[in-house]
Image 1 (cartoon, rainbow over the protein chains, first blue to last red):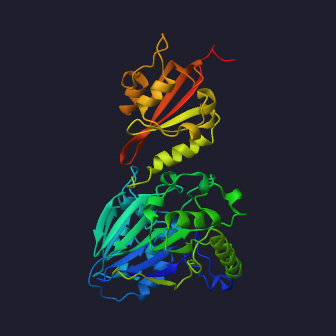
Image 2: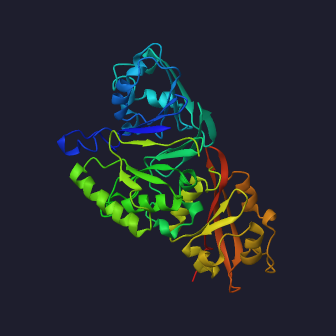
Image 3: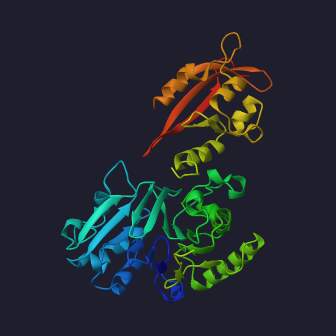
Length: 287
Length: 134
């Protein structure tokens, strides 16, 4: 499979010259499977550029896997070009809720007065499915979802194709104020999902210094993101969901700190990078 | 629930209980006591880090509740347990004993933990019974 980051920013789009290198678009990662199936992890504003880059005619449905329905993960849906093509088939997966169906919850955004278009007016064939905390197949990949610690119902996803696996947990506060080092593996949210993933894309919104004033906001400090990856034995870690206040220069400094801490934890050099728009990861399906 | 991790609802419940000064423990869907907090450890005379998780039968054998003669009640005969396993909240007064063989009369409130995929266990809080404090 081939993964490409189309949006790595958290919370709110952050365009501008100070964020041009890492990018200002919110969460979106495209995963192209070897059989040609297209998976899209979250529909933040990054999905707009992805939609423009995808071929106009596709062989099969586009599968959009939403981790949760916060705006920075669905805002791009309204601007996703394939959604406005009558011959497109789009399957949207997301967390279930006892309160309302996935379609009804997304329709709160794609409806008046927030939107000039209603979900039912989209010319494409759009269907909605609850992503249960189980495994299922999409194309040649096995998808696994599991609930993770964030504000409101939130999922992480693991995509396994052949011998390779990618785990995507863009919004996650696994410690919630408790040092991860004080918790056994089974008590760390999302760890079983991420275990031994070749590539882990994980939230790292706050620095350690910023975290105390954001405890409970649903995002971890850098050290917890690194410790989570270490405990999961992830092959590579893409730090994701950058805070909108963090400029490129600031994130460069975070990258240096992350590399130093990772080395102190005994991690292999070069395994931790900060996700930037356009970054790719190629995962061969053969062992 | 993930294949090898705890359900998120139990993880969050443990996080809550660990931050409370009210004595409380956490049981999973099988009835195993999977965590109790520092306040509970003070009453029980043994910290969770010392005892670790334990099956319900082992828990009742060690800490009770006990009958008027000080004999542990069977786990399955405890009304609170029956209610919680039936997905109902429960409140009762009972006598427990600490690892130092001290008996405490306590009021117990138990709340089932029910996620979108079913019953995951319960949070059980206990307080000194009014009149037995101090």
